[in-house]
Length: 190
Image (cartoon, rainbow, N blue to C red; front, side, top):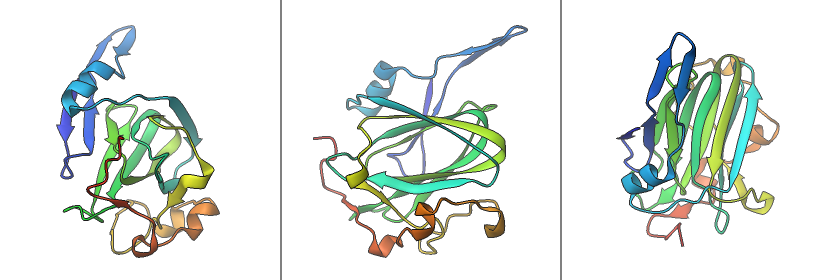
């Protein structure tokens, strides 16, 4: 596995090694020991999630507050998405900045989105199956979000606004300036 730090160094691209031949391929999608060695801290994933969406579906920007903050390890099983992580740690030198990475069944890339970041993705083709691991359980009371089109963040979702399909929940998310955020010096792994 190849681990690549992005422009926001806490957000990591993971490129697994693909072993392919005429029969198909084999890929190791997760190795806790290698990930923890690279990060320098422990992650205990406890829940796996999967969604299926059509082109234009945008899910996000979502996060959970402590004590149920989550690290996410995301990947695409079928199809293609633009995956986005936004730093929402007040006091961070990269607060309000984002990383956008294309994940697809073809490139097999994964993205590690740590606690303290909002996460979202938009489906760029056909039927797309998206899977992710989280290191804390879902908590409706701690569930939060930020408007996908917040101009202060400036995400280019690659599709026109008229082609974007949102849930009712995601049409009502606040701007970053009004969102409940994390604090940069807060120990999110305590």
